[in-house]
Length: 201
Image (cartoon, rainbow, N blue to C red; front, side):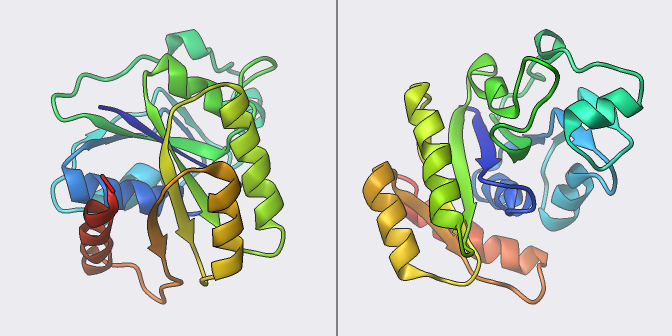
């Protein structure tokens, strides 16, 4: 099984969630499109015990929307040229920012999920306005009939925001990540244990 980790916005915790999933289930990690440095794959390698990291399909210099970063690098992201790396363990595939971040004039980040035959895990960070952003994302995913495993909430707990999002989305909550002062391998292992407990509920 392959899982595509996407989010409601940039810096929502996709890389953190990807590391937790790799640690919990022994999956390989792959970020098809990396814009800017440091690379998210380096962080996953640092935070996990023994994760196989697959190279990016597009490694862009500028920390910007992939379509803009590619333009600055005098290249074009072609979604048809992004192919799954070989893996016997399954893949955690990390997106880039929110679902409708553009890759080029036609394609968006979320278009990768069905092409790569991956079930979606949605990361929602909790801030004022995140209910709207999360439910807009949920509406997009449901209107396209994409398969979603569940939601991971990231940040200071907000029980009422979480409740109403789960009520309207009908998705299960896979994990709640607290605001951590320091992210270490031990932090990842702790959350890996928790997500395994919630995985098939």
